[in-house]
Length: 328
Image 1 (cartoon, helix red, strand yellow):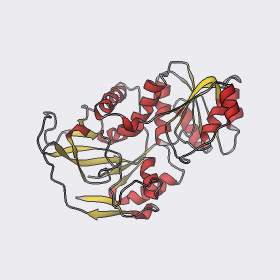
Image 2 (spheres, helix red, strand yellow; image 1 turned 180 degrees about the vertical axis):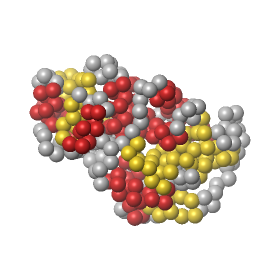
Image 3 (cartoon, rainbow, N blue to C red; image 1 turned 135 degrees about the horizontal axis):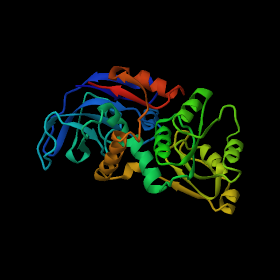
Image 4 (cartoon, rainbow, N blue to C red; image 1 turned 90 degrees about the vertical axis):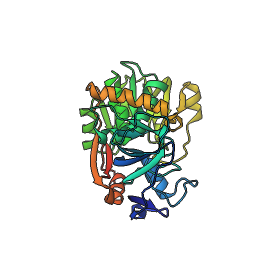
């Protein structure tokens, strides 16, 4: 098989295509021939070395889809050879081999059949990105129609997914993004307003849009100083859910304002969900896609061999939506 291996921390150049032995699945394991692997910000952070516990060498990639190539036998009756599948486990690219590969071998508990009619490239976007957005919005925030919601950084993968799900849920959505073109895209996807944080005062614009009250919810996938900015835009007793750390692993807040306005700050980690729970959310997302309620935004696809170029593009600030490696 071929795989992108990372032997050291650094820039995109550390992602190298190598020939490796194809795994043979043991009892209870499934060998998946990967069709598509989605690029996530965790892949970039772990490539750089932001997480000290990431073992090297490694094959990155936390989201992928493909077909069953071999099954070592076990309790599953729905994993016949050739079955289209998605990986929804806790180890893919996070302690175990990742999806940047032509093949990946995993526990049968982490592999699930893709519903008929769902494109495998789209399926590769749902296992972490859209799953996180759904879990945060629908289950943790319990989003209601007509609620006001701010989504910082709407061009990113998770933030973009939040935007699409929120609009389909009937929320009144405001967004921020970098540049007029990205803001126009966000508005075309249903945001009522998008503030260009390069040229506009985000707090001023969002407070004006919300009638001076602030928004009821903020779903922040950016982190860092974006948290305080979100709190500035949040109404009294409003809720901010933090679901990402693009701008860093720590943040500080104005404690006086936070306390006096009785605001809520909640961390959300979809990565701790068990595979069966992930599949339940995956099926909900697939149903929405089939019904035309949700359209997954894919910016660009790259061949597996061009993973380094895909990371460069991801870090350029130009992308809007998901980036996909095509592996077969």
